[in-house]
Amino acid sequence: MTILDDIKGGLIVSCQALPDEPLHSSFIMSRMAIAAIQGGAIGIRANSVADIQAIKAVCSQPVIGIIKQEYADSAVFITATLKEVEALSHTGCEIIALDATCRPRPGGITLPQLVKEIRHRYPQLLLMADCSTVEEALAADHLGFDLIGTTLVGYTAESAHRALHENDFALLKTLISAVKAPVIAEGNINTPDMARRAYELGAHAVVVGSMITRPQLITQKFVASLQKANLYEHQGY
Image (cartoon, rainbow, N blue to C red; front, side):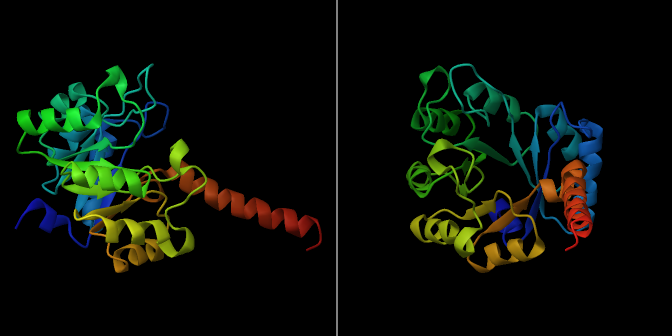
């Protein structure tokens, strides 16, 4: 069995909390990961060296590691440079995800240059391409990424106003038929039915984050629904 076999057909839970979020803590993320595994998750996606190390200390399941770091000369911030890859290589994560969009990268290095250097230095690591368009996925597939992810659909200028799930996951269907590498469905998958549908269409695995691990966002959805109902009631609907 390979790592790709281990995650096939399962749910990967993204356990992330940024510095301005209430659950920002490596310890809390490790407990969140344990809860996800107990619920049946077959893997974890996590951000930062500290969080990944804390999670790997308590979980044996595969981890997709990233480092979010902003740079002044680029909009790319998910594992943007070799520096982040080097740091992740010491965490024990089995897969490293990096922005594979067409946007210029920090320092002017190109994606092909970065991938070539990663393969040379860290041949044991699996690489996941976080993409936002079919064209980017095709380019990443040509570069030999081990996994293609839909992570950035709707988050770039090239994919603005698009949602992964629209038109019955039309973009996901196209992408799966276009590339050779396994495809990970990720990005605003907010219900169990959406996750199941993505898998039925051919996704290798599904990543869900905010709707499992960000209670403030889950709470907002409930509150907004109640406020809407209350508004209707007061208006006589």
